Amino acid sequence: MLELAAGQGGMPDWLWNFILAALKATGVLAFAMASAGLLTWVERKVAARIQRRRGPEVVGGPWGVLQPLADGVKLFAKEDVMPRAVDRWVWALAPSVIFFPVIMVFLVIPLDPKFGALRDLNIALVYLAAVTSFTVLGIFMAGWGSNNKYSLIGAMRAIAMIVSYEIPLVLSVVGVVLAAGSLSLVDIVEAQDEMWFIIPQFLGFVVFYIASLAELNRTPFDLVTGESEIVMGYLTEYSGIRAGLMIFSEYIGLLATSLVAASLFLGGWHGPFGTDSVVWLLLKAFFLVFVAMWIRWTLPRLRIDQVMNLGWKFLLPVSIANVVLTGAWIMVR
Amino acid sequence: MEGYLDVLIFLIAGFSFPIVNLFISRLLRRDNPRPEKVTTYESGMVPFGDARVKFHIAYYFFALLFVVFDVETIFLYPWAVVFRQVDQVFAFWEMFVFIGILVVGLIYAWKKKVLTWV
Image (cartoon, rainbow over all chains, first blue to last red; front, top):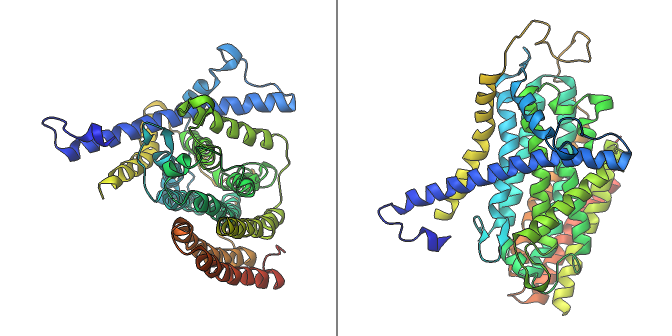
């Protein structure tokens, strides 16, 4: 990107950088919204296949592929009911606070061997950990601002779960950092030239994937929006476009997390026979998305005590052991 | 600092995108709030009491444990980055002691049944 930035005749550098950054952000937003729309359709198709239900097939296009478009129009045109009892600003800003972290994840994902990432930060993993923890704040804003019992219970569960799984998530990546010797995602992908990190870091990958599912509140960790007990959790008091945006940010988050997992463990852009390109990254990421959907429509929902046991008594010891074993292996070798 | 302009732009873009959508939606939708419609949803019952109820102590236990462990895990990142460049035997045993203290803390919490959700 630096070669592009140099020597744009007549235009000051900061303005050029600004325009470039704005273009990147627009591109990411467009890509994220398009894929989120696609993923809502894919999710229903996968659900229909796995559980022998009827998926979207009526609205139009082959296999009902226009369904997300119809849903989008519906969400925009629906009334946005703001309950009287809500804490107005906290409630109204919560969708934004939940939405922006998932967009910021895309900034550091390595796309292509020639192009690199949109911005190759040398502290990318710390940046990711910092940015994604804002989601907790947004969830609590939604739960507290709604002034609704279901919302608050859902938000409290979500926070307890997300903070518990944050530790195994962060620790499982330490093994990758040890192997690559860098926090930059581009360096980590380049270090997987010979072998994907999923082979030496299999434990790390398993912990990372389970913990990410919990961070995303996906089944089997969807007790925060358990319909049978607390209606829709912290989403209960949202309607119309606000609810739509929050559901969309969950799908974008699923894709973003899968992209990060593909970069960390599945070799990112690396493909066989020297065909390294962004296509491989997307294929791997969408495969991980599919696995998450597969899990969702196969497993039942966990209770909060089971969730906590899994996080603290299984994933945390395993991830600590993974760090120690990886360190010992590098030391001995 | 120049590299962080992108981060700032992404933050602004991600934060304002929902707000822009809300404005577009406002042009398209109709707003018709009625007294019944804007009541708090409680499965059709008339809401009673305050939603901000007391919460189980276990939530606070886990929050405290999170603060302890999360701050310490962040120390592992710089260690992991430079591990290949420094004296590995020394670095490994030093971190072994550090993680050992963490593990002792985890076992203590475990034995004290803080990790058991009641």
